[in-house]
Each structure stands twice: as structure tokens, then as C-alpha cells.
Length: 218
Ligand code: DX5
Ligand code: ZN
Image 1: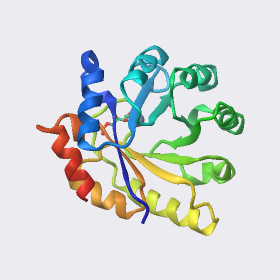
Image 2 (image 1 turned 135 degrees about the vertical axis):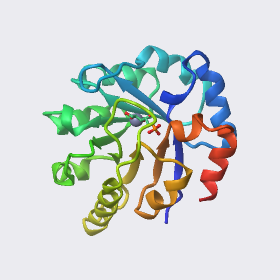
Image 3 (image 1 turned 90 degrees about the vertical axis):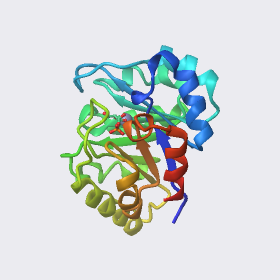
Image 4 (image 1 turned 90 degrees about the horizontal axis):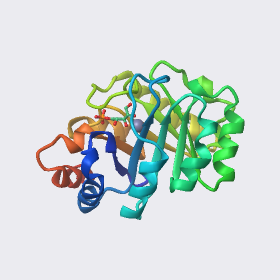
């Protein structure tokens, strides 16, 4: 299988010391930084936007994976691109003109991803699939860190992996987000996940550096 990348989610970091926390996860061997954007409308929580992204961009060379949990993402995508995002993903549930939104991300030179909530069927991305660089499968209902992984999402990933193979789209990678920890990481990887987001599973452990190192052994 292709190598799996660990993407710590800054949602569970200490927002008063983001630079130090990024340095810490880099020390553990993290390959991607996951950056959650919430608007209090699409999801019932608020986080950070392009201004904070612009500053943390100076702290790391790792790709920054911007997960937009916001309504009308088209309005903000250029700002996130300019602030230094490398990957930008949008929820299929927020994009009535998903094809246009994906093209916008690609025109800005960024990797474009589509995200599915736990209840959203894979069939909803049948048509857009050839256009995206990656698919992010939510394994919790988005909005908060520290929730439990919904087990049916693992089958969903296996099904998506099979579809990508069938349709000769194996260059598209699968990312998972929500409730992933050391103890369920193997099942997630076995299903075909290539990018693993983990927030509380890393930052809320005693020694986040060693947790990431252990994750990389799985
Ligand atoms: C949830 C966010 C996740 C969150 C995951 O809405 O999209 O990225 O940080 O946190 P954990 O890994 O704690 O479930
Ligand atoms: Zn996320």
C-alpha cells in the first residue's frame, strides 16, 4: 500500500501556542497539518480563519490541509489560498455548485478535496470524483474534537477504495477525520485510508510526540 500520512488536527492544540504545538508534532514526524475552519452555521462551533492561517504558515513547511466546515465556501477559498493553504476541502453538503467550487480550488493551484458527513452517501460524489484530488470521509459529525469514531465509516472507506480501483481513479487519496486514535488506527488504514487526521488522539495524550511516532509504526 501507499505510505500513510499522519495529520494532527490543530483543533485540539493550544491556540495560545500554535507555533510551538506545530513544532512539537513535526518532531513526532507528522506529515500534514490539519486546519479546521468552522462558521457556527454549517457546524455548531467557531474556530479560526485565514488570518491565523497566514501566521502559522510561517511556522511550518508541511502541507496545510484546510478543512472548510462553512456555508458558502466559495466566498473564502481565495483568502485561504492566499494565506498559504496547500489542500482545501469543502463539504458536499454545503456546495450546490460543487463542480465550480472544485475548479476554483484547482485554479488557485491547490489540492482540492470533497468531504462527506457520516450520513451522506458515497453516491453523492459519483459525478465529481474524477475532478478531485482527495476525498475526506468524516467519521464523526463535524463540529467538535474528542468524539467517538462511527464504525460504519470504516466500511464506507473500504467501499470508496474499491470504487476508486474499479474506476481507475487510484491517484485520488482517501482521508479520514474524527475519533481516530492509536487503538483504531489499524482498522482505518486497512480499509484504505492514506491520510489520517487525529486531534484529541494526539494532543490529549501524555506525550504527543511519542504518540505520533507510535502511530507511524502501525
Ligand atoms: C471535527 C474536525 C476534526 C477534529 C477531529 O469536526 O473536523 O478535524 O479536530 O478531532 P478528533 O480527532 O479529536 O476526533
Ligand atoms: Zn477536520
